[in-house]
Amino acid sequence: MSEKVLMKGNEALAEAAIMAGCRHYLGYPITPQTEIAAYMAKRMPKVGGTFLQAESEIAAINMVIGVSAAGKRAMTSSSSPGISLKGEGLSYLAGCDLPAFVVNVQRGGPGLGGIQPSQSDYFQATKGTSHGDYHMLVLAPDSVQEMVSMTFKGFDMADKYRMTVMLLADGTMGQMMEPVSLDMGEVAEYDKSWAVTGTGCARKHNVVNSLFLKPEELEKKNFERFEKYRYIEENEVMYEEYMMDDADICIVAFGIAARVSKNAIDMARAKGIKVGMLRPITLWPFPKKELREIADKVKCFVSVEMSMGQMIEDVRLATECTKPVLLCNRVGGMIMTPEEVLAKIEEADKTGGNN
Amino acid sequence: MAVVFEKPKALTDAVLHYCPGCTHGIIHRLVAEVIDELGIQGKTVGIASVGCSVMSYDYFDVDMVQAAHGRAPAVGTGVKRANPDNIVFTYQGDGDLAAIGTAETVHSAARGENITVIFVNNAIYGMTGGQMAPTTLPGQVTQTSPYGRDTNTVGFPLKVCELLSNVDGATYLERVAVNNVKNVKAAKKAIKKAFTYQTEGKGFSLVEVVSTCPTNWGMTPQNALKWLEENMIPYYPLGVYKDKYAQEG
Image (cartoon, rainbow over all chains, first blue to last red; front, side):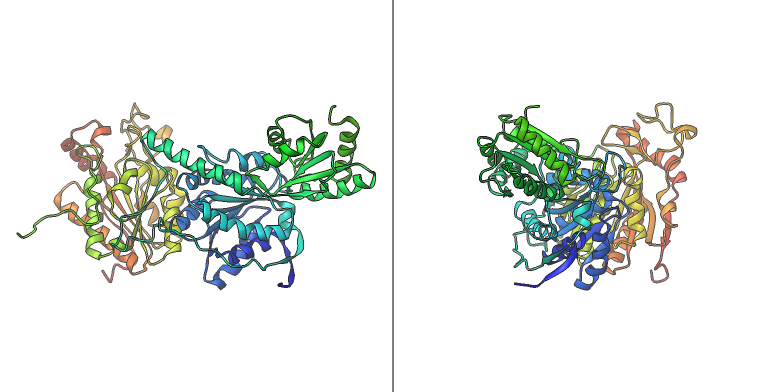
């Protein structure tokens, strides 16, 4: 086992990207994730990589497209308003079936919003970053260690499935310091014979393209892509259960909201309330099957999230509205306290979620 | 039998979709001839843009990426940074390069990105059916300037070579045309210089080709060439706007 080092979330994920073989970081400054760019600017030249500060978020994501089309691992990072600008490129990455690793260290919105932590880009990440039918694999770490492991795994999944993997963090995850192990093992190699590296006059030319003017052809492409998505939904769901064995109330929370919720659960348990948590680590694919099974065992759910209630819709869909789902939320950069979550748990315990 | 004329190897056998009298065909051929002559077909990567030349990925027999509208220089930057030994060119129209992609154009030049940009300026959006372009001439009638481009309300055309000549990072900028044999030869020389500079690691080159769009100009191919000579070239004078290595040339 390697020794643990004390690192900030943003810097730890940047180092994990380098360990994952990423040698091209293309980005644009925005709070609260600028440490990633600053770290990459220092590190990339030392490992023979490229750090490039683009003229815009749009240019940065298109540079990612170029690097990825050329067969190399590429990443960019930003925060909420910047991800909106990258939307165009994210759709093209999907349409071209290109791998990419994109980090969103979320801040409050809409508009310029604020610079404090938020989870209000859940819809954007899991459903509608940009135009067209597509998904990104969305990973939601709840610790600096998971920032590292999910970054390493994210690059692997991006190459394996030829799609964008988004690490959806928040200002807290990016800024907090925790001891981490950087021992991540070997980097797997994937076939990239589709990449534009020059034909060498030895093969038919490769074309990386998302334009299909024949509707039959475009429909087929979409069907094939969704076959892949179906496979991912069956095989890549990640989640953590906390005290769910005897729970009759289930909290659903991710990222920093899950960290706060764990404290609240411990406090509630001390009071004799049987509450547990399912923490989705993949937001897409969402742990639908698991939640549906839990719905048969608990009396209600509490969705704890730093948004006006976005993930709660997926909880209701996954559980087919068989049990009530309460919302415990703070927004605009505010983080819920364990006491606030505890109060919601107590309400759920008393009312069974029927308020 | 001696071969006296043949299709460049860097072009595929695909039938071009361009309208009769359009100059894209000539420009494609010149780019392909240069790629052949420099022996770089196997290591060239082209970036197609959005507009009439979107399907150039089917026409150039080199690895190709189709970029979003205006983003070709950013995509090209990524390809070049990933594999610096590749020769990377973008092929863009005026709407793509000088309107929606202005930032990508200016900043790839400012960075001195070692890529070659082929810029086809025909003063109109062709693919979408003839709307006003950033390079549409004052008074020119288009679908979205039906009373002629009024500079009081929509301003003036962008002169890309002149604009970029103030960008320190740009290495080589030349404006050419393909309206007659003499100009076609000069255009090829410019394109060859732009690609050669890239092979020598000399940085950002852009060749602007002043072109016609008979279909959307509403003219016969012949009249379109005449209109180009009488209106386009006087507004967009041909010539070298910047060449950091002129003495060596």
